[in-house]
Image 1 (cartoon, helix red, strand yellow):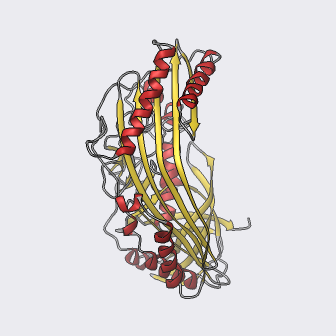
Image 2: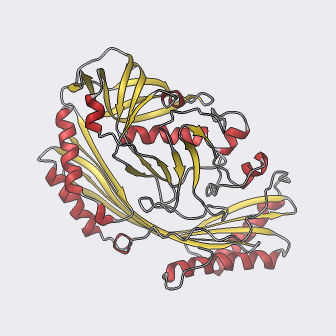
Length: 457
């Protein structure tokens, strides 16, 4: 939205007023300066549990103000966390001008976003915004009770964020969002099982179902055995797919990597399987996320991949200027080496039930999680990492036994390449990495995955 919505609530009005106060201080100091201000206010709350009991409950009142100034080509940025009285704001502006005075001229400064309305979306839930420690504790109790006396650990979190952006070119936008998450494990003496849920609405979190799933996964994974390394057909649960998509987005579709030739992405080519469609859509009701980025650029709906053909690239204003393109609304707060970071991304689901995907595997592996994943070759997106929280051998369409964790070394883009995606699940699952980074992905059945050793080597 281009201005605070009538009746939207005092926090958004306060946030945009605070941004305008900072701009007034900038103008008073140098009328010719270009400046942009981001304000984030709200609450972040977390309830942790272990051994079946809550051991930590924390809540943080968020107040962040970021300002970036360009004066005669000299650009600098600064941030204030905490109280925002007149003295603190004057010190913030004075500091950013002092930094700009000693900064070299930025020949690639792209200028400011012009006044443009952002999509009218509102990923907000009052109950989540007002969630109490007792309500989070109730979710913990439901998870622990459903885990049926297994050892449990995890966390329940809720957040409510109000955001505002304003710049000296006249762009002014506000937004807000809530999110709720549960992430917990059930544990036997030889295995862990995990369950995760995320939503804009805390009322969507079914903690008892999560506890039952974590416990069942732990029991199914008990007493794992060894398996020889090699290439295996795989059914990857959504957590693994989220890891793949994260790397593909940041290292493949990040504008700076594409501009510098460090990405596998070649827009307009059929580089991935034709079943793959990956898009950004902040208006999708299943996701949270703001309708504008850290430079005030609106986030429209864009296709990064459509039916396997790579398309748009994630740009901020700087990488868009270099590429001769338009920003896609993917600038990040603070320093950003990627030049366009993902937000509100969806890997389109398919029609396959995960149980049917397993039934179609002659010999392969069912994998719950990837972790400790690291880039070996950014150009080809070869990644190494480990499995976690459950791996099972599939033979003749049936899960036959649990397997010890394995190391893999695999090209992520190659794994999604033409002919390599055998099926896409009908189980879209939301993963949240913050109010501006949401990812909705299903399970995948892939033709081949390279497992290179055990977890210890």
